[in-house]
Length: 551
Image 1 (cartoon, helix red, strand yellow):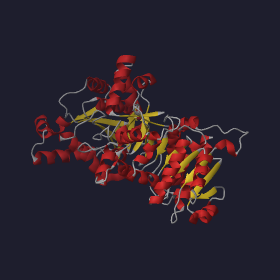
Image 2 (image 1 turned 90 degrees about the horizontal axis):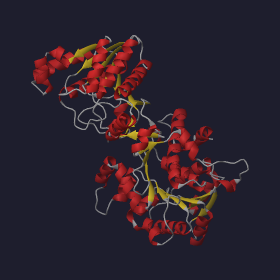
Image 3 (image 1 turned 120 degrees about the horizontal axis):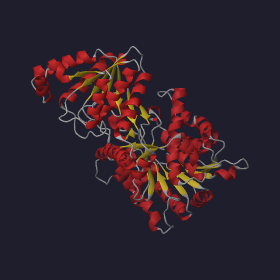
Image 4 (image 1 turned 135 degrees about the vertical axis):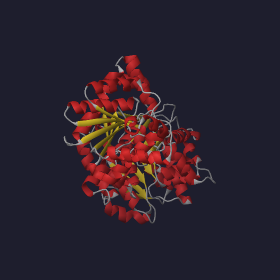
């Protein structure tokens, strides 16, 4: 398991490690600087000149340690100290003193432009003074092959201004001019990126690589933070597991090994009845592809039997595309009820349409599933129907069909627009709701989960999974790629999650493992087909490669 932390959580982990467990701050800073130095050394040539651009806080201290270690290893590493803070941290002072004794060269802003002028221009002086300083700094920075951003760390909560903003803008301008001939590497998080939201706080460094200390920061996963962080390398700097256990960060991700442990065992003496029966309610008169993609995904996930309940017009098309699937049509209610009873789990929504008769179909399927205590995943048009009939999900509770527990929670898989519809009232502006979700995705997903007694899989470039209840725990998926941003990818996910439910996995485990497998398959498809040209069918075809790793 990997935790994703905010600045506040990082500060708490730091404090627990130092004050409760007894690992001292200089040890952590040395480890952080070492990891940064090793990452820098691993991606540059020995002849490259390195400039660590630092401010007077602990992030600057990390950068100074890296410069010292690089110099000891024979690299040309210099520190440029901005001198723009009113107070230096004690750890920064200590590391500066050590580095100077070890022969590290320091360039001070005040030495370059004069102490009086530095003070004036740090407070936004005249245009002439600013222009002169900008030219001087640009000339200095341009003399190096690698710029290391050690200006601000995860504690930044205000907009960047003054001299620090100017330095950041110069870094970005030089990177834009020089492209691959200049490498920009950020220490822990790009300066100017909010560790909480990923928003730009005034201005921010655009890094090629970000070396994250201990944990990946939450703000590097969303918004501009994802773009500005570049390639993220998370390095262990010595935070003990006990510190995480004491405070439990609210956001986490899974590894391949974690997912392996969640998946059902496939015994050698099994038969098709051992691996579940999924009822997939999908497709309409004019839409067959969604049912095919979801059904194909479910079968490639190892489901014993998949039955597709669809419009009669799709029988021949789906039968030809998926000869392994059982097919049943919507015509008779008693057949629909028997199909739900037959299944170990139900997936409903892809391509069914939102007409009145589909509303009645959804009610019938869900009422029967509730009465029979079947696990359900709802996607696409099922969610759109519920957006206009918000009592449908709550009928499960009001019908007295038993207590909803972690063993039988249903799953919804809305993308951002579908979630905006779900939380909107009749006259609400959907665009405003979308912005609310982007800024408060965790809170929205949690609220919906509690309101409807479901697990919310909020699909986006970084999908978030939230269960109901009081525990503040969110799964964030960090694999996958932009090649998956195409029609049909969500249908594949519905089939994947439905398949895991049918095979007896708990709903929450099915949701998080399903999202991980979906993203992993997308990454394999992108590698083999290219992100631009890959399709949802390629994603399904790549599931077999995923299971070569997982089983």
